[in-house]
Length: 459
Image (tube, rainbow, N blue to C red; front, side, top):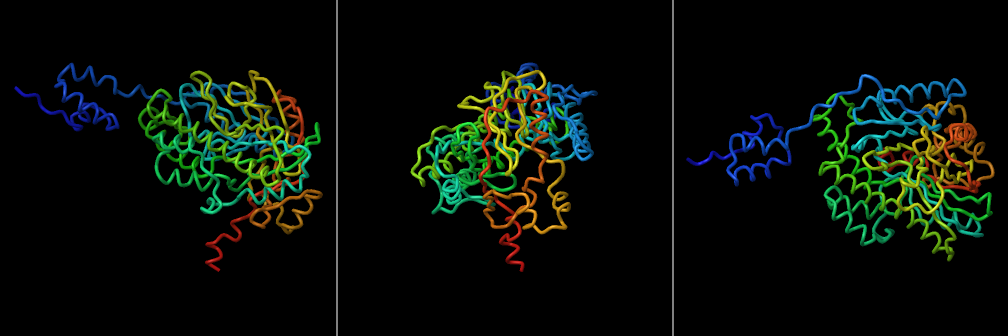
């Protein structure tokens, strides 16, 4: 008697959920004419693991922040409440909060300035859309800072979108091959965006900073930005994959804390995609720095960089740093120097080294952070014109906005007190300052929305 053909409906009737493994499994079953116990034994490998429930109590985490006034108290309480909810996620094994911490979404969302360690799991929502947001420093020796700022202004690009074909930087062959070789990065639109966004910095708190080393007097160029469109697209794909796993293995987990198990095909592909996006982001910094060097005919005396918004692996533990600077060399395979912690445009960029402790988990702050939203800060300054606030807070500095529109929410008063952050770095053992890059000037996107093309058309 001929065996009955097994179909997807048969598997669903047996209690399995439709998945990518269905076609291969059905082909194997029907080719080998498996039936009865033989078929069930084969299908055992595809059974989902037990449902993972939220913990009844939060995993303990280190608090490297303290409130010094009423405004900070509200901010710290919000951060700790959010972390307490997040730390009930089944995969989480450790965590820490840095002095620059501030809320970054609904309760239970990892805050900016948060570090969360998870076992065998990558949480896309914990590195967020700005994958590999990072900083790079190039030492220009004795070059005049104004010359550097002028040359950099002509080399970089801020605001939405990418570069047109006439102004694009060359897309390296090895990067193109890496994108094409990864299932999550090899769609045509992803590659097109990766080409056009190379050499762009976006908006918000991303900047190009020029200053002088307190230790050597040399002039330094520092850029701050992430992975732009390619990173945002990978994040969207990662969140969709994580959501599928969440529904199957931990429906109680908050959507923003969904994870991709590392030991799955999806986990391996996503981890490899993250490393490619990291390489693209590093190159994104380099093309801006190199173009500035070439314009001036100068050779670099030193260069180093670090990300502060990424996922770092240590055996089967994945450290998710949402705005936290890695101190431990094990987190950075290409480390070439100390780490960089910018504060605000009127303060020095700190050059730091440090050691891993039980409370810092191998990380330091990534900047000064905020005590209030951009909107609230603008409300607080409403009695003054943008120009008045700008001139008051940037005296003696060459501060430029690429859109030619002042963004008050990026001026120094929008951020936490820099001295407070530095003091708490000392108090909690979060890195030792080796040098300071004293500010000369900077370029930021500015309020590009004020004169956005669609607003002009509407007028």
